[in-house]
Length: 221
Ligand code: PRP
Ligand code: URA
Image (cartoon, rainbow, N blue to C red; front, side, top):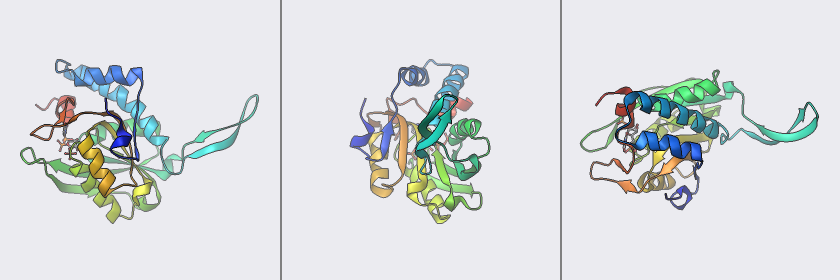
C-alpha cells in the first residue's frame, strides 16, 4: 500500500487492523449489498472521528480536569462551528456518519455528477448554509479518483468564501492521480483517507479499488 504523503504533503492515510478488515469487505466483489452497507457505515464512523480531529479549530493541549486531577487533551470545535458537505450521492453516506457524531453541525449539498464515458464532472446543484466561510468544513466523498469532482466541489466552497485551509476532505479510497491533483490545485486542503491504491484504469476507476461505491451501497447496478 502506498503512502499518502509522497503524493500530497497534506494527506494522511489511516492505518488500523479494523480499517483493513472493513476495507476488505468493501473491496471484495462477492460482498452482498447488505454487507457492503454495514461495512461502509462502520468504516465511515471511524473516518468521521478522524476527520473531525483534523479540523482547524480543534484545541490541542487544552487544559482539562479529570475526576482525579488536571491534565491536557484535544477538544473538537462545537457542533455549530462545523459544516459537513456532501458531494452527492456517495458523499451523503459519509456525511451522515459525521452527523451522528456531530448532530448540531450544519449541512451542505453539492451535486457533482461524473460522466460515465469521459469521467469529467458536471455541477448540477448546490445548497450551502449561510456563514460557511467562517466554519470548520468537512468535505465528504468516499472516492478520490481523478480529483475532478473534489475540485469542482472546492470551487463551489471557495465561491462561498471558504478558505482551503479550513477544509478537511474525508475519503475512503484515494489514488496517486487524485492526491497529486489536489496537491497542485488545492495544496492547503487537508485530506484523510483509508487507502492509497495503485492508480486508475482506462475508465478512470481506481484499481484495485472497490468498484462504484454509490452503486454498491445503493444497489443501483
Ligand atoms: C463518484 C465518487 C466521486 C467521484 C470520484 O461519484 O463518489 O464523487 O466519482 O471520481 P473523480 O475523482 O474522478 O471525480 P459519481 O459521480 O459516480 O456519483 P455517485 O456518488 O452517485 O456514485
Ligand atoms: N467513483 C467510484 O465510485 N469508484 C471509482 O473507482 C472511481 C470513481
